[in-house]
Image (cartoon, rainbow, N blue to C red; front, top):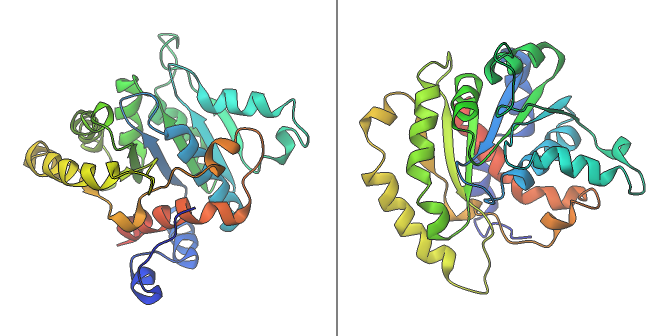
Length: 264
């Protein structure tokens, strides 16, 4: 797992502390975190799972994951895979529900209403928003406090950043909170220069394709290099076994940095 090369005190200034996050939840109620990009295969489900483990284990919160992935219901499938493994689903420290936005009945509740229905029962809700579900995605952005947009250093993925952010702004306009949207790079490796080459391209996209019409509705930023997520073997391994607590540090740092924006 990649660890930050920043001096400890400088890194600390970029992160909300666990105590600050718990205090924010105590004051403001259920924290709603979305993970989504309007493209499949960008690492959304893995990030969702690791954030949920981090919130449940490291912060001791009662956590719900909502799977809205129209294409594959990935979190739901992840949970089903675990049913045949030692320890089984009972070793998962958070609850999971599936929201099928593609085949829902005409009178079924919208995603933001589903999220609101669970707020009183949980400290945190993490929503895996699927690659093609625009409607569910902007409904998520109507309710979320924070949305993370993961992408790998590839043009196939970074060209979806601007459309995804604009959809987030559509939902954020109706959000009672000021929605924080953080674009973050995943699947980074020291074995090639793809991440370094992608960063200026994405910075250009953020500067030229995301205009005032977006910034009037939401706060959006591209997180720094120190919070890039590596291509660690521990991420795919979580499909067959729970991550160790030490494996949660990298995603935990990204989450705590994002929460620094939410807390202010």
